[in-house]
Length: 386
Image (cartoon, rainbow, N blue to C red):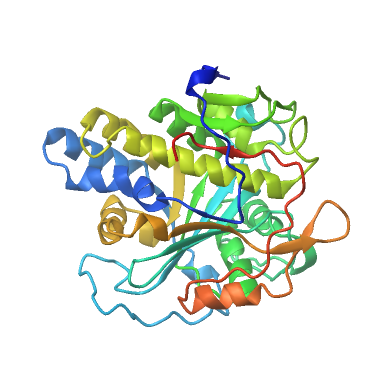
C-alpha cells in the first residue's frame, strides 16, 4: 500500500462535504472510451480491439419484471449517434465486493461472497444538459422483491432487510454478476418507480487497476485515519494514493477518524474520491496521449461488467459523444435522503424521498428537501485544486 504524503506547502484547504456536490463527472467517465474510437492509426485500432475483447456484458432484460414504462424521447434535438435516441437515461453503477480471483487477496473473507459496497443511480437528462448521481446507502432497510435468475429459479422476497442483500441474492443463487445486477435493478425499480436502462459493475481488483493505471489520485483528509479491517493507515493532510490505498480509503467503515460503522460517511468519501479520480484522468490529457489512453482504456475494460446495451466500445463511445457538451456545473452527486432506523446501524429512506424519485423518473431537476442524516464527526476530504 502506498500513500505519498505531500509537503505542507502543497496542501489545499479542506472543504466540508455537502449533500449535493457538483463536479465534471461525465467527461472523466467517457474520455478513455471515446478517444479509443475517435483516434486513428494502428495503435488506436489495437486499443479498440483489446478494449472490446476485455468487456464482459450480460442481457438482463429478460430477468426483470413489472417494470416502469420507458419514457418516450423528449429532446428537441436528437443526435443520430445516440444509442438511447434522445431519451432520458438511468444507469445503475454498482461497486462489488466480490472475493473471486484476486479480489479475495485484496478484500479477504469468503471467496464465494459478493455484495454491493456502493450503488448509484446515474440519471442523464434527455437533452444531455444535466446529470445526477444518486447514492443509495447499502444499509438502507428496504423490501426486496422476488428476482428471476438466469438458471430458471427465483428468489424469495425479503422484507425490511439491507438494500445490498439484493445484489448478494442474485450473486449467490444465480452465481453470476448479471443475476446480481438484475436483482438489484428489480429492487431499485420497485422502490423508486425509476426505469433503469443499463448497468456497470466494478470490483476491487478493477478499481485498483484503474487507479494504478492513472499513477495516483490526490486526496486530502483533515484527521488521521486508521482501519485494520480495510488496511488503511494515513495521516492528516494531502496524499497521492495508489490503487490499494484508494480502495482502502473507499472501503473503510470502522476505526480511527471515522464514525463507527457509518456507511453514510463512507459514501461521502467515495463521492469525493470519484471526483478526484476524474480530475486525475483529465490531468493526464487522455485524448492527446496515446500511451496513457491505451493503458487506461484496457484497464477500464477489464474492471467492469455491463448490461449488453453498454457492452461494446462502439455503443459506449457513441453515447459519450452526445454527452461531451454537458455543462460541467450541471453534474451533481446526491445521497438519497435518509433517517436513522433507530438501531444506530441502519437507515430508512426519508418520508419525502418519493419527490426525488418522481423528479428523476419524470426527467425533472430534483430539489432535495431532506438532508441525509450524516453522522457528526465524519472526516471531510477533497481533491486539491477544485
